[in-house]
Image (cartoon, rainbow, N blue to C red; front, side, top):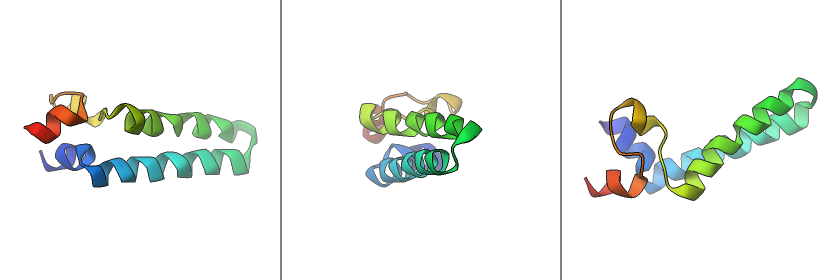
Amino acid sequence: MGFSKFMASPAGRVVRVIAGVALIMVGALLGGGWWAVAVIGLVPLAAWALDVCLFNVLFGRPLSGKAVRAS
């Protein structure tokens, strides 16, 4: 699948970092109940740091980004 392969690529990892930071910033700037958005923003950052792609599980592919890039 093209999408899961892209998300496991270096460019996809950068997209995840940008999305995670954006969610954290929105949650922090709006405050109140929006802190939940900031916490959700930690998920893409953790996925980037651990080199896993959570979308791959939906497509029946390996969780590890390294394994997806090798296939």
